[in-house]
Image (cartoon, rainbow, N blue to C red):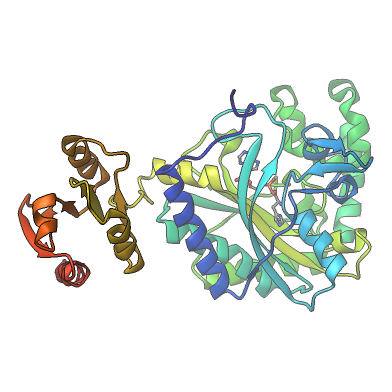
Length: 416
Ligand code: HAM
């Protein structure tokens, strides 16, 4: 038996890095005033239809199925549509500031940094249209990368303008694609629905035509241009370096206005995005809610951890066990002693199943514990236990009754 293709198990101690990453993200999101939102892993298919039927994510990569009740459902391919759906369903007061940590499913061709199940941490603000919120969103994610210790991260920024900008641009862009109908073949039909999609194609034979395509920035209304400038000024004021990337479109249809993407130098260009997002001012309305301008991002956990590995940051904590209990006597009180230590806050482990003293000591060594408590028959008769300092190798006897207090004192004396 194996896990499904492109889906990973995360085992301890590697999973310690996940805990660390999630904890740092949760702490930062809380500081910024975001609450955790949990939504189902499956949604009605229609929820994801709104993110774009011409996108690969929906048309080629989605895991969809009909359940026993005949409902057309899909495994979540991304986190924003479920947030918008939950907003429409529950109508919380705005601004609604939420964060999430959740798995997403896309049947892509698996390779390093690209999986069929990947996890994202993300944040969304629904119900405000303010360039200050855009800046806050972008800086929240930058701060998170900083919290992890990442340095080799670049920020790309673009604007899709406003509705008028996009309708002007769609026309000229479509005219450009039509002029290359032979090269584009069947894809032209997709372009007729959303001409932007071809811009993010990685097909080598199209790159020249893509490069020659008109630029959205040339069709920007004054209002949209001013908005984009405000965001850039905000980022500059925060000392956050960025590059304006006029060709950045991102692969989902709901984006309007500001777009951003963080890239890590640790990867090949095709999967170097370690997070990205943007405004989606009409998604909630398209799902039947009130006009609700919104912005958010999602950041891939596996890719971020790979980037951390490449930059040699966020190493897992070494010793997880503080005390190891070795049971060398038949009549020992191992169960109560171990429980006592754990209840007093010591990370405690032991061996089970009556293994030899030698094997238990080897397990104690391997555990990385600072102290090994040995329950021996002779000592037990006198109400004592043996305690070994694993770093120095020194061993002494401590009264069983005093053990917790004694270990607490030793711990207090350790250099922090
Ligand atoms: P996305 O760019 O499709 O956006 O995904 C966000 C991040 O998830 C990517 O930057 C990447 O780090 C990671 N990612 C995506 N696909 C994979 C994969 N197959 N394997 C590993 N990692 C992957 C979204 O999903 C939007 N919901 C972001 C957003 C939130 N926009 C507004 N709010």
